[in-house]
Amino acid sequence: MATISHCLFCFESLAAHLEARDPLVLADVQESWDKYCKDADIASVSKKQLPALRRVADNSASESSPSASSSGSTLSLATDTPATSIASSPEPFDPSAEFPLFVTWNTVSGSGRTSLRGCIGTFQAQELETGLSEYAITSAIHDTRFDPVSKRELPSLEVAVTLLTDFEDCDDSMDWELGTHGIRISFIERGRKYGATYLPDVAVEQGWTKEETLVSLMRKAGWIGRKDRWQDIDLHVVRYQGKKESLQYPEFKHWREWVSANADAC
Image (cartoon, rainbow, N blue to C red):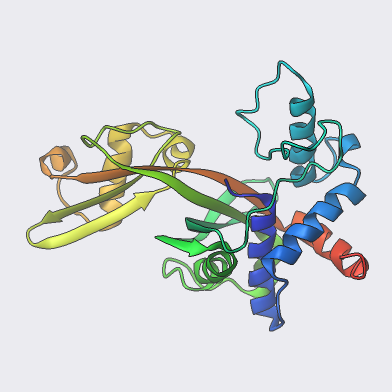
């Protein structure tokens, strides 16, 4: 699953690109995040503190309770880490590990409402070091639905990373579960090929049924046929899974300032 370190690395890659500087490498981001968590004493994190640290603290609390389920946790403790330890940031992925991935940028309003600002990814497995950096920049700068993200916009941004797994051909267009699967469709009509995808969280966030999701996805692919005739199209549907992690700029800024202030320790 995606981690907070992956989100930090995406922000770091985009910020470095916009500021014309060299970014930290993923391994250094993962190491500094681990030290940052320890230094922040996450075992005593309150609700007023940064959400990323609070999620780590919540995970630590749930892991320490024998009856608590870990199914809703966004971060996990290493198996050899005591549940009461404050060193409960996730076990880092090898930066050379390969995953299909998507990077999403949202703008966050003063009321906390998010709006899509860019989303691009790939179904080809990428080394995390290269793929996250490349798609963090590509989705922010080269999503043709939007103007390129500017440096002044950084404080208003949220990033979400989704690593994709468990690809399976569906038996039919409804052979997938809302909230569990993302879907990728492809079809041919009148000699033209169409294709598009929605990540696992999209349909649930929009409140769509399966049928509404499929029709919307066909529209996204460019299909302009009659809505009530969508079932006449021979859809090829692939389902997949992916756990998303997200992070807002103030959290990135807080961590980055800590890194700069503790450069020798990192």
